[in-house]
Length: 151
Length: 430
Image (cartoon, rainbow over all chains, first blue to last red; front, side, top):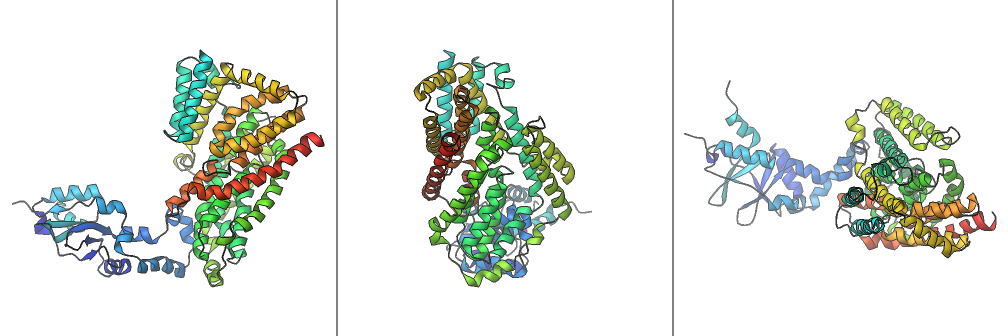
């Protein structure tokens, strides 16, 4: 009997596009999640917010491009950079492309189908849906547990 | 027939470059391929002739300086200097703008100005964030300063490379003839900054601590590499200055300098070759072949005869026309293809001049017009385009007119100051 996406999907916290970005980041940090599923008012998944995107938003592009600039900041300045999340929503943190191109998997998808979608999306987590509702999510680590050969 | 084809290809390539219908490299390469394929220029004329072919001195001078910048970039020198400047200015916006512009203009005399703005712009964004002001005026000011500073030397601004090579003008010739004027222009520009950017330079005393907390020394990871690079840069600059007495070309100095810096840094080929702007080099090559076709087919000679007849010995008029005309044209088209086209024409005019001093005055007028005119609009010079790109990448949009309303003032004032300089130095007091 093939293992299906719905069999390995786990309950996963969701946020909306209007959730405060700082709250979303706290949720990621507090529960050590690789990303969050973003849903709209009808509970439909609209995007994945990976932890790396939160960092990408908080850390200025010029610092990402020139790592030497990261070294000149003191701790307080680093705190100030992250503090700008407090005045932003998840919608503002997500690039427009993320909102256009979300791929989800159906509960009946096999683990290989799930793996293929995650590999294509470079996403650390993927939403599993049934009847257009999110029934859970699969993380990369959880998926690898199922597809790695047991030795 | 060949002349007509050369003109058609030239005009088409220019239109495509100016309108950005196709990438400028594709346009230049396409034009070169067509004139070569139809026999307007042969392999010898395109690749080996000093008059009609690719100017390898320019290509290797650019290549060498790009590699050197790639190595110097690893040292964190510009990050260090820019943050030090912000701390010295104690977060006062105008003082910071002043120091960053002096840094940019000064560095643009010993390394290509386009690469200097690439190094200074990111740290400018950081400093502006710390002092709580919009970075756009600072970035625009740096592009303008880079174009003014780059005017002073053979290697500062890409058009000067072409002028130096085609006009047989050395690094020292540029230094003696243009550097004194550029010093005056820089001072005038810094005074202008206070006026044109006055609305944006608001001092917030509460931000002083945020600037003073920056650790500029942390930007320098390898102090020994920095010292080696600075010593080599000083030697390379001396090499440029003495290249003529030593009987060598600046391109050879740049090549040796690049090799020594690579040795000193221990960087792998991939690392330093990544810093080379291959697009710019290929663009230059394509342009040289397109313009070479105009020379080879006799178009430039016929045009020169017409212009020489029209000048009728009035060389100050010719210099004035070159200065103001170049400024105007460089404002609307990239000054690199403009100078590549004008160089053979000016070479003929200079050759027909009554004495070398008068002939050289035409070259300096072309350099000043093209370099300073490049400041007028957002697309006039490479440094402007680079700064606008960095700003956009960081979420700050600099519109064409936003740049132009500052640039046109600076270009006009600096060209207006240059005009009496040309008259006094090369005609009235000659």
